[in-house]
Image 1 (cartoon, rainbow, N blue to C red):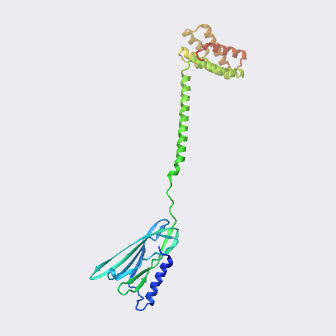
Image 2 (tube, rainbow, N blue to C red):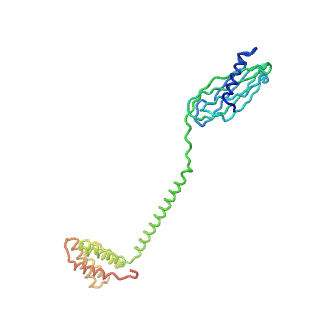
Length: 297
């Protein structure tokens, strides 16, 4: 690309020749027009500067120097091309020469686009002349925001996926553990369940928590005998429970023990009475005797 100084030198030379050289006309014989493909763009956008020279006559009438656009910090030349031709209209030729300059917007702002000076030579007289178009205003806005690069997210997405996978795996293992514990508990015999509950009662007995001790002891005793005779006993009086046990053929000593233990439970729970630690030991021992040792416990 030629330097800007060279371009202006050619333009001034053509103007000087047109004004001062003997026998040269100062009036341009060619009409030049210029236009932009757009007047409002954004940085990084492209546009086309179209420069057209028209005259009456054939194509061979004039010879043109290659014009060069006058650029500024807002624009960059990306390429250029040229074409032309002649048209016969009512017996007369009309010709044109077109130059296309592809420009790229670089920095935002408002700027004047100055069309290149067209320097031409009359092929018959070898007279050199020049002509130029009017400046045009171009507004350049900021460049559009670049599209979001989703490729940068993959490490975070992978981390979230792995965290979710581990959390799900941990949750499933926890569920399996709970189901296993529940299944293990469901498969325990009434005696095994009662034995485990009696172990918890020892702490209540040591702490002399009489009311809570007898409330839990009643649940253990009733639950154990409900499982054995297949009849609901919760809510029954001690005498009614003893009667149900008699119907099932339970011996008298056991029936009396059941009635005595339940009576102590009701006395403490409903009458607010207290019993001695020795009585608690006796009740605990009676209920414990109903629990048959099971294998594996």
